[in-house]
Length: 93
Picture 1: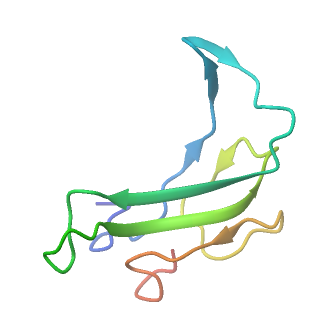
Picture 2 (picture 1 turned 90 degrees about the vertical axis):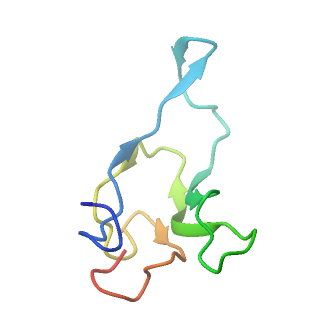
């Protein structure tokens, strides 16, 4: 519930990890940015076939190792919060 819209409404903390098969690997040298998209294929807000976009972030630098919990806006490194179902309601996501 800490990350749920009806709970703390916080974006989760997570780290970026790369693997080659089952072995840890470095990120590609030409990686410029990440985008993170959390959507729910099984939860249809309007009882249709459209999935639910819970949260997104983009323009995350390719050198980033992850994102902190509870993004409340854009970050100094240029990462930006994107749209999501609870954006603009309650705690900023």
